Length: 228
Image 1 (cartoon, rainbow, N blue to C red):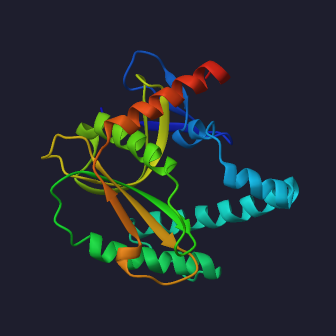
Image 2 (cartoon, one colour):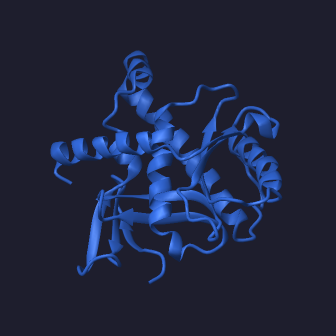
């Protein structure tokens, strides 16, 4: 069957796939990050109230652009491509921290499947608890498609589920086909303002069913609220 074939991803992060799991031509589902937007974010709301909508939107667009650029460099790394030159200082520092991390991770003995998610941040930033809901949702997708995943690293992998009706692009998967268990997850925090040691970068956790069930409740709420 092979991995899903992504047809389109619109500006609202709704994914359209050729449907390989049921007998219809294609499916369209909201992304994990779109679903998680239904959660309150008081810190962002306070910042928006202080800065105003225009300034907050401007800063968010700049931050998103830098994150997108970093992800493209990371994806290029797994395709054997080296950035010719990174002009933006923050993106450069975050990418150097990625290189510090991946050189160690590549040597780690693989005795499980791991789902990774990369977050750019300032050094010492708090970890948003919603990240773990996101990662458990990704882990569930990886487990569903485990028979189609190649062994070893795969980056930027778009997947979906018809059962819970959501989709997402996994930043990085390291697959061990010999282990038929729900994947572990790792949050990879990449500071954009300081070069750090690997102990300041990775946070690993086992799969947590309770967090996936919490995500499923959010998915149902999103369905009843927005009809998609």
